[in-house]
Length: 208
Image 1 (cartoon, rainbow, N blue to C red):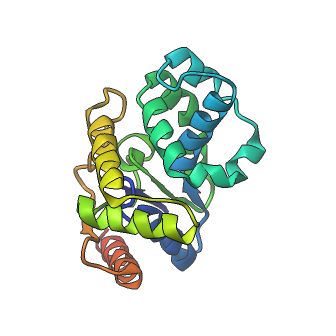
Image 2 (spheres, rainbow, N blue to C red; image 1 turned 90 degrees about the vertical axis):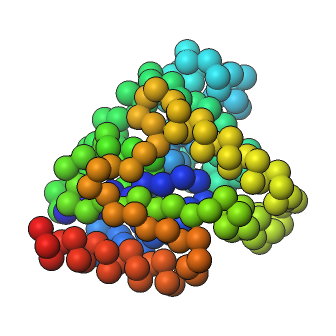
């Protein structure tokens, strides 16, 4: 069984995907970390994330980088959005994501193109959304908890820019699969969002 969880930054898709994986006993992959690793590797080695060649070269990042705390930073997230627009990068990372999705027993993957590109045959697809203010508030609290300086207005502007970049890129743009179930988490707390996601997936599996 494959469960695809897509959505924009800070919508709650990562938290929901982890919870779904635990509930159904499946391995989980946050595919966004792959792009963050590419972006971080690129800039740390003097590359330009807007350069297709530099970004593609950074796809050969060392495995330990996936555990680097810097991957979760706002700066790296913005860089990841820039490298992800390159078709060459998406192609380079496709096989890795596809193999994870197709492993025996299934998996849960979250990202922006899981239900449309990576695993269009997924038995259950969720597209998680939330308003810009709600997402900015979540990210603001996360950064405060990490002891990092943050500004809600700046975060909102950054989220709007990322949404535009992700939705308008030519390679695998951010959009809901035709058969995806939409989950708006704007007014839901963590536990409510998880409970709703589990209920939607179980309903989908029962009806299929």
